[in-house]
Length: 294
Ligand SMILES: [Zn+2]
Ligand SMILES: [Zn+2]
Image (cartoon, rainbow, N blue to C red; front, side):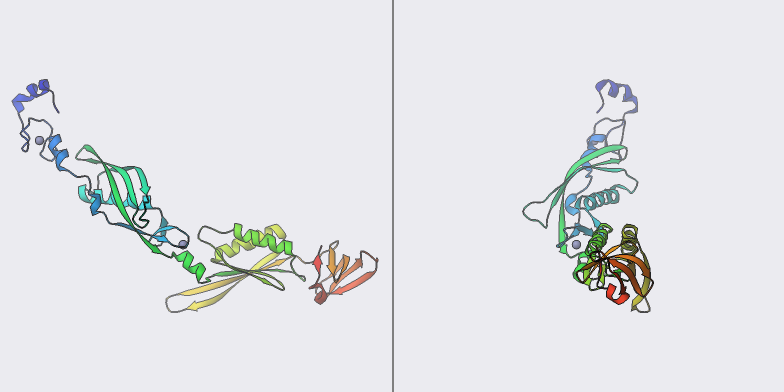
């Protein structure tokens, strides 16, 4: 609004607002500022159609396959709506986003303040946006439920059976190596070791590396095609982790006896000394599969 003095000064260039008849120098879309502000609606939140899905298993929010939050989706829709209404170039700022989940869990409301610059004027509006939540099972959860896996990490040891401690370490490393998307679909304890079924090849490789780094030995990979069609090929990968075998100086328990390893004969067995009797003995590779490092 102009002061009287300013209005006097500009009297020789008299211009009037065509709507309210008030004298003015500045026009916004051919109207005075007041009439322009009065006639414009930044956005009509009731016309916004904001929906996203919530996973009934993990509670995550999703837009398509993308994991997101209610606030992010609302902010995006509000910005889009304002730009659609007032021009794609206009700057929009969203502040004070807050979600209110009331008794009707599937209809949360988000309150926010939207600011935008239109025709050189800053406009602000407090709005409340109604959101529709669709209850679904996300892709990750449905894969877990379906026992999906893309890789198997097989923990074995060279010429012996891995100890319980080693397998516990491997299991811990497996869970620590998971990315947000990854999961362990199954742990299978076997006579000769442990199989860890995982959701991705990369995750299987991370686990194998981690186990070898911590416990020694090495690992190899082998791919097997399990889905094949004209459009796609999907592989499952096995990671064969071999922990080191018995070595000189190890104390080994077998059938209620404990002996110290003196010499390892590759592929045949080991020579050792009974720690109780001092007796020298030879244990075949086959028998060693029942032995444990102590
Ligand atoms: Zn006016
Ligand atoms: Zn889920």
